[in-house]
Amino acid sequence: MKKWLLGSALTGMMLVTLTACGGGDGDEKQDVVKVWTYPVHGEYEGELKESIAEFEEQNPSIKVEYEILSWAEGLQKFDIALNSGSPPDLYFGRPLGKYKETELLVPIDDKLSIDLSDYDEIALDHMTLEGSMYGLPLYQFLHVWGGNKALLEEYGVDYEKIQAEGWTWDEFYELASIGEQENSNGDPQYGFVFQGVDEELLDHLARNNGIPYRMTEEGIQWDDEKILEAMEFIVKLRDDGILPAETAAIDAAKRQEMYYNYQALFYGRAIPYADAMVEARNLEIQDGVTDGEELEFVLLPIPHHEGQEEVAQGGAEGYLLFTQNNADETHIDNSVKVLEHLAGADAIGKTSSALALPIIHKEAADKYELPLSPENTVAAERLASNVLPPNTINSELAAKDDMFKTQVVVPTFQGLISGELSPDEALEKFKSEAASDRYQP
Image 1 (cartoon, rainbow, N blue to C red):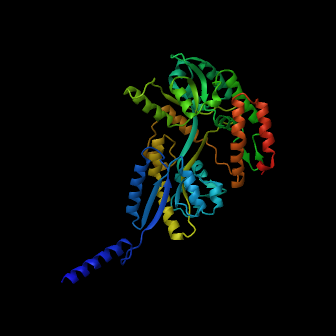
Image 2 (cartoon, rainbow, N blue to C red):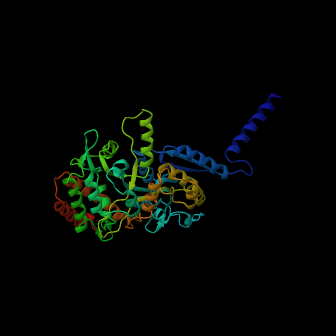
Image 3 (cartoon, rainbow, N blue to C red):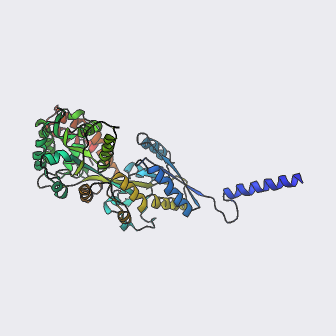
């Protein structure tokens, strides 16, 4: 009797084990799809868990395993996995030439079952590389300039007109000149504050002076009168006291601190989410958690040179599809199903709303709202329509462009903004380096 009971128990355990492994009649073993992503916003992991649970309930044959990478170390971890031939099935980012060269980045043009016309066209463009689409966007980011609403109103600046129509370099200069004085605490107040530890300010102005891309199929474009004009304008802002003399040493944290302390009439770089960040800080001030003076954020476009087209700085990021050396088509198809879900309407709506970014899916736009003031909402939507499509250069040129930025642009701009180089000397540096073999197409 005891032997019979033991045998029955063992048989039952074996059946349970076989069922869990998909070995029972009519059952299938679950296909595991691995997702590597980042803390896209504060509540993203919680939303991701709910989204995955919903997907698995609808697709019981697929198991989704995710990992949240850190912004500081995640890219290196992914590169190691990719170069070893074992990337995750889905990775959060944007398509890069070096990913394509591994032949593990998978084009999805003929694998999707969704209607791409529901997505913003520019956002989709940023998920393509050399004519093929490799992922779906989760959001479209914007890099903008901003203003202190109280100071703008004090000086009579018609910021709503700027938001609706844009402004030129000359118009910006005239208005920024008003801010040259001291604030109520006796600290210097500037017309404009921007971080100077990188090349972003020069990039913003170059794009709005008829140089949309630093590198094209013809080579480096920062070698003529247009980039010289942008550098001369920056030096003029510094020499006339509109930009702080110490701009070369100002990083993003210091720039934000100066804005919060009423030391900046205008500042950059900002993002639409700065509106929500400022509101959160105001609540902390009211609750006594943070010291300081409350303020309101005004979202502004980057000014353009007279006669040139205004363009917005931005792009898109989302989930990319990868394969492993031994993956079969069924597994890839299952990964595509997960991709469509994680970058679907609800995911886009929740993420865009959390980050105060323009909603890039029609269905999501009808269901979700942005945590922006009405005037900032209008400005963000207009700027989103002015975002340039991605540069269409091949991966080899993209690598050269990145090297030119790192090895030439950043140190040269540091020399310019610190006063060690004149605009003409900086231009000659760009021209001589652009003509060297290492940066030639």
